[in-house]
Image (cartoon, rainbow, N blue to C red; front, side, top):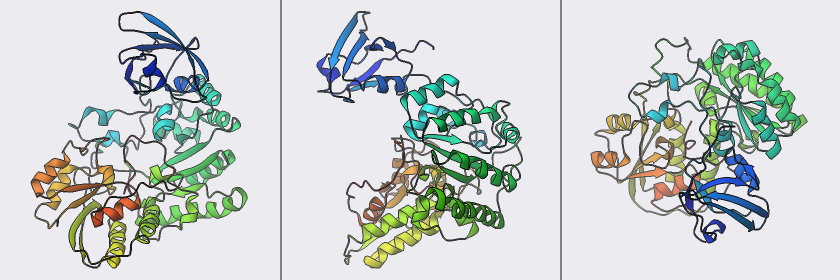
Length: 460
């Protein structure tokens, strides 16, 4: 284990740490005599009722603090590095990697390829397991962490090595077996690439992955994203309408087979498949409580259910307002339909919708989460935006009013001379944004993992 420095950045006022005069700049050396590798060790060790902390002050003085507290009571500490360790970068060179399809000149953080299992638990990221050691698996089992989200792509070891361009990529399944035997909850993902892991290979992968039920609770199948920046990369092609229908038929046949035995539909097609095939989205019950929202599985269905539920609370009135919204080409028809639901109760609302083409990454990219400020400015220029423009929150950089291309929200407001309201992911905020009201906090069954951004809203 490398020597990690766990410097404290903040101490919550009134907390145990605050009462003990622990301060920002102090360094946590150990808990109960055990060195701390990362955030998992920290959260596991501080749960005890009796603790012995070793703190190093900036002047080198060491404090040994004895603490008695309630079980699982928080100490009130935050650290300069939220992982309490360096981020682990990806060791693979996947043929479908979207980061390899990014144009030059964007901010540096967008080019970092993470494959860190800790982000799987903390933020819901999907990881390949290729850089996980037996020690990492031991710790997951020791702390009984879950769920862990795994990018499988295929269960064919040889093909997985080829797709990830990593000769060790086919060796992960003993690790998955250990997680299964320990009862660790898992979710899976398959990025489907035409001519590689589709058709018979998809059938094989689904069949193989069912042996990890019920601890592997869900597997999503998502189409590969193809930008226009693919020169020199593996020659991947987009799926056709007929091929999307075939993918849906394969998945739905497995759902019908598995649900009677496990009470789970297990394998799920992302919303993009249904939109590409021109088919209706599945009914709500088939999403098993929306286990795969972060992969765009059921997001549009959930938004519809939430919009409908929110509108039932409203009696409607004659208020007059002109308002606009803009979103990606994939979700636009659905967002338009949901806006029309609002208009039925509020007939004097005039709602102007704009479908934004992704010129920055290329027209094959249709999800709203990859739209840029410059595409919005170019395509909304000269348009009637009414009194306010609504945009989904997944367009923005985490915690900031900045688009992928570093254009700021205020730049749009200055250009168009209308306020911009960022709409959160839930249906309540969707409705109240159109009505110029504030939404009440909602805690519906959205089973997303703790996120650092709103990367899932209107994603499809």
